[in-house]
Amino acid sequence: MFARVFMGEAGADEREAFIDHILDCRACGARFDLLKQVGKEIQNQEAEFSRLARQSLRELKTQKKAARPGRAWARPARMAAGLLVVAGLLAAAYFVLFQPTQTDVLRSGEMPNLRLIEPEGRISEAPSVFKWTPVRKADSYTFALTDDDLQTIVRRDDIKRNSFDVPSDLRQKMVRGKPYLWSVTAYDDLNLKIDSGQRYFVIE
Image 1 (tube, rainbow, N blue to C red):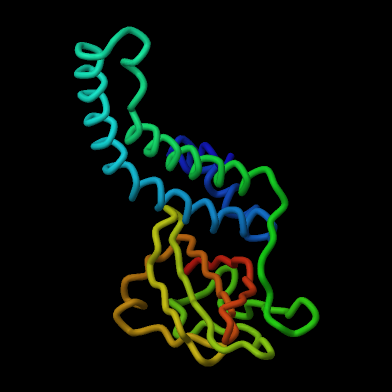
Image 2: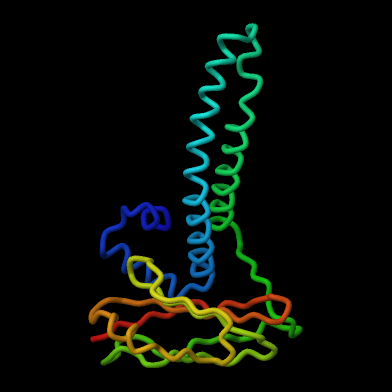
């Protein structure tokens, strides 16, 4: 299901079931966040990798004409480097999907509790504020809001309190009947963190 959603092959019902699951499953929610980061890195590397591949192909053709047999394939170093970059990113995606997730937690001696409070579920109007429980020893919070197409609507870093006031222009852009996901990450002064998981809401 992860693969179908990220490849854009999932239908509306599958995508809705996927969203419902990652909202309830903390492990899959963490994998989802990490996979989005991996996907962005792959997109950033794609153009550079294509350039290196074309250049290396030209080098191979030149070497094949000039070098003795057995040496034509001796120096495709740039293409190999590009392949290693992509392979590393794909390996990271595999690790995210199939290995247990671990998250650095705040320095408190035990797992802090970061719980999302509101909004949640079906609501009558666009929310004016998002609230979550405060985390002891948290230095700042990061808030993120995503739509059902997995597009980031807003992200705010370095929030100093356990709430986020929604700007009026953002409220006006929220569409009725469209599911939205939101999450919060708490950080301490050493950048150790704890994630909240995700919750969804729909404006009726």
